Length: 180
Image (tube, rainbow, N blue to C red; front, top):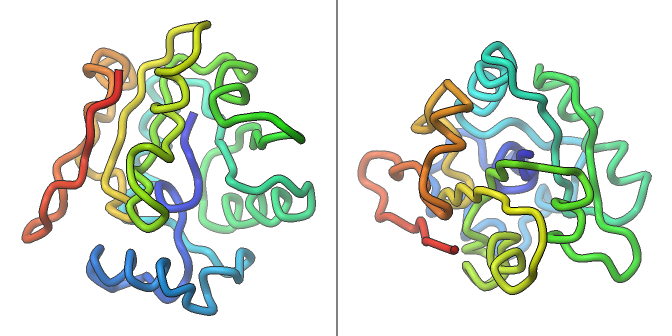
């Protein structure tokens, strides 16, 4: 399962900007942050998810949206961006990200550290750590940092310690956190 907003896709004005600027844009709610139809892939996201699929992973996505119309926009962005097809899961009323992740049967979740909205305590991994149920390996990346540093083989991804993330882009401080 790949989280969408901030992990696999990002607001359009973030393209070509340093990761720190992308976070600032999100925090100050740049107009493109709310223009979900114009979202674009983060660096290497499409290539990485395609590699996981070629290696046999069943791909699904996790949206931050709750409204079906907004989730449909996410699906369109994924198709336009060239991502492999897969179900896009989202939270129902009173449902948590952890609940959705377990409902989807995900073995591995790749998500960002939620830096622009309050940090690691807002991640799905932190929710999963506070609840019981099916074990999920959580790979936490710097928000808007892309997927380039993750292994192409999903077996290697699944064997990372829970909470392990990719190194940041050159010149960027590490924002990855560990959640059990």
